[in-house]
Length: 338
Ligand code: ADP
Ligand code: MG
Image (cartoon, rainbow, N blue to C red; front, top):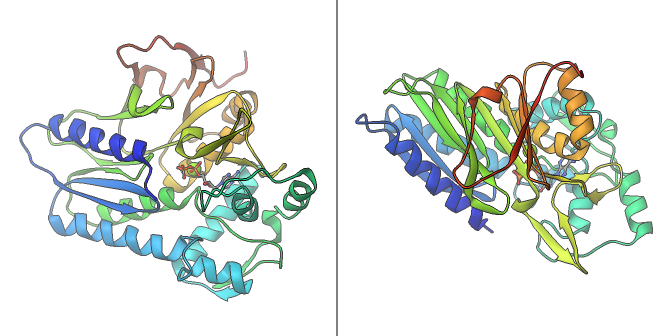
């Protein structure tokens, strides 16, 4: 199942990227992976682009919890399994992030994701007693990883969907760093990975999707190397009895997040972290997310709330430009709370 908005956004960004880069022709490739359309633009050899594509496709096969042939599916079913280096690596980094993000990001949300129908599209609203049981079983501390052996209790299942694209970005960056490529823009469906220096010397320009119309952008961020990850309720949701239920869940309640946030964009050198944080800060809400920013270094954010206000941290405040036709108010978020 491919998300239409994502497809349009990727195609548009590809056009923007290519036209912005003058005469040096990059190698490009578009393919479907991790439930979205991905597009790669590499200023370098075709073999580098192929290597990145193959790496991402392999990760997708390994990490897709819905695929009966994946390693994650096997672990979720058998409850204990020997896993590949990729799975062990991402699992270990994810568990660390669950801890750092104080459970707002929790890779054991999968039974709740299934119960709400987000993997199949057969949406339903579980009743309070079902939600209580689901919430009791969401607990990343119950996951054990010992070398290449991962184990989970009977009622627990893992979901690496919130970090898979970020991890793919990190692995792609590793390939690029070991290659002679001059630069690359990898749009991994909401997670954009930027590498090197463009031939025309200009900085990268990343469009931030408009939740009202995800094929369009409400603004642009001028960036150097790194990863820009966006999470939004618009990616997947359903409506029932006038209530909108989004695919980002509050692990404490096993329920879709219902706050005033429309989207969270994180800018960070580390893709896995950027991806986990875009989900987690969405769960935290604006005040907690702001507090988290003030107490932790190494990232910046753009948060859009449903009253069309943009909160942009000071590290990227001057790098953001609102697109024509948008009259959002912009507030700068500083490192100190006064
Ligand atoms: P997208 O996949 O659309 O880019 P995210 O990166 O925010 O969006 O990941 C959302 C996915 O992660 C959900 O579809 C679900 O599988 C899983 N998920 C939802 N809520 C959480 C959470 N609080 N912690 C960890 N994973 C989550
Ligand atoms: Mg995420």
